[in-house]
Image (tube, rainbow, N blue to C red; front, side, top):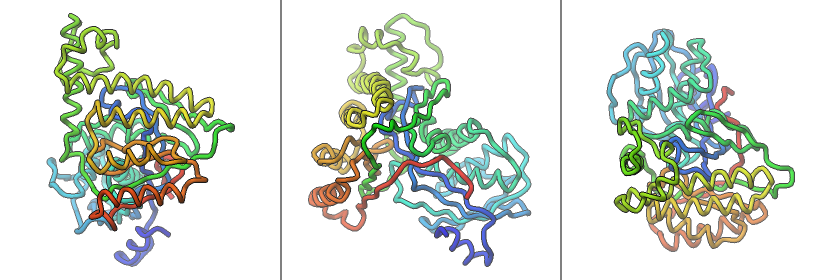
Length: 392
């Protein structure tokens, strides 16, 4: 029984009708690509968001979180049109997106539990998707995978105000245990590629920096605009047609144009574009390495992605940069990078399970030597891949 189930029974005096679980995700290669319609790789992991829930026939949505204080309420037919600047804004955005498409009459009462610290694993998308699964279930709705992804993305883009792409939502809906998700975010085509039987054993290690973050309060949206500015400028330099700024993507600009005109861009825009094009190449090479069971090459490309994210995309806090450096010098680590946008949060690594304890000891010792004030907040977690969202 999950902690969310126990809390639900204590609050409501009955067992929940069901529990929705949405896994967190990691993106080993393909970072900062989805908002420019690039290709990505990803895994869901066996940690994530649980929502223990039951129906409320009066249409009221009533939610508590085991990570945040306070109870939130609204009527499913009267979701606030603008965000309230608290932990439930992602859920209000999801409620609003769903009710724009479907007529809902039943609300939901629920308790939310996150099984890892927040930051870098896309907890925001996970809680949205788990909530949507619960709200749809009590109203007898069945969303397609594509609908679920689109609604969750709309909640973040339009309600919360984060210009994210669909990487997070796609990984948390489409992933399959022991498979690598390979997704083209331009046309939504995807493969779930099984691990080659010849591949060496691996686990997914999560190292939480001790610093939490929300994308809405970071430079995330600025980076997205810088990528669009680079694409817009390159098309103009090349004499190509272009439309509205918000609908311009690096995916629309051939690499040859970047090669010819990239040095005309302001340095920040040029570096963002350099990351995007090099990351596109790494994704293709990584998928081929995964298919042939070459976890060492796949891991190396993951590490190269981390380097480019730091020095070209210029994301990553001092804490995450230090953790990345430690991972690069640790035996048994196939590859690693910070997870998510890199503004605080955590690092992920693909590791050889035989080195698990030595890796955890070395990373903790060296990281806390650099940031002793984060003792008690830093943590490490060993995970495996998992299926996407499900009702338990």
